[in-house]
Length: 70
Image (tube, rainbow, N blue to C red; front, top):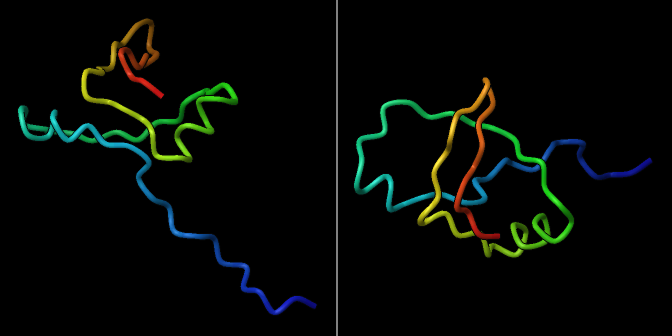
C-alpha cells in the first residue's frame, strides 16, 4: 500500500482581474468553469493568463468570457 495521503491539493485561483477590483465595486462573486483547448490549458498552468481588458457577456443563460488572453 502507498503511504501517500488521499487528500486533494488545495484549490487555487488561476487568474484574477485586479484592475476590475480596483475600478469597480464587486457586489457578487461567481465561480465558473471554462471549456479550454490544449494550448489554453497549458498557458493557464504556466500562469500566462491576462484578464486586464476582459469581461463577461450573458447570452441565452450562458456566460461568455470576452477579451481574455491565454
